[in-house]
Length: 205
Picture: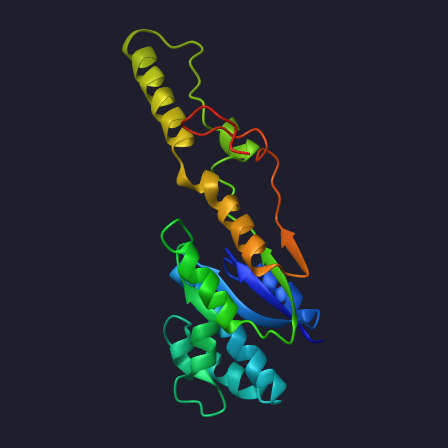
């Protein structure tokens, strides 16, 4: 299948794994969590060795490891293109300062002879309904200092919610789609994104 996927806010690679198993080719994975990127890199190593019918060396290295599982376990394996592994999965925080260089990186890594799909699940903690249901501090039955303390904590929680920078991550995702113009995209939607509010008091949409 001559279709590449660009995996943004990839986490440990759940969405990407599904696309790999469906026969798509990975172009790039991006996430701000180092441990998640290490996991994605391990899966890239897995698929490289699988294509060479050398998965036995993958499992042997995993079994023989006495510490944390990481791509470094395969550093001396000549069957692996480690440069490709490291460049495909990048530890990067997507924000205003990184978005332009990230778009250039995506364009460089993407094979123009292939159709592309952008996939991603920007963190939803800033606006999910579950998050908001736990945000408000219960005040019923409280009196005196306990009530004052609870109100202060409630105010702090509201302030953190309104100023959470993750509100804007979906906007960066849309910016990348606009510039790359993929054949299709997959976005992990979460109830609450349309009603979330930022510090300005305006809807985040």
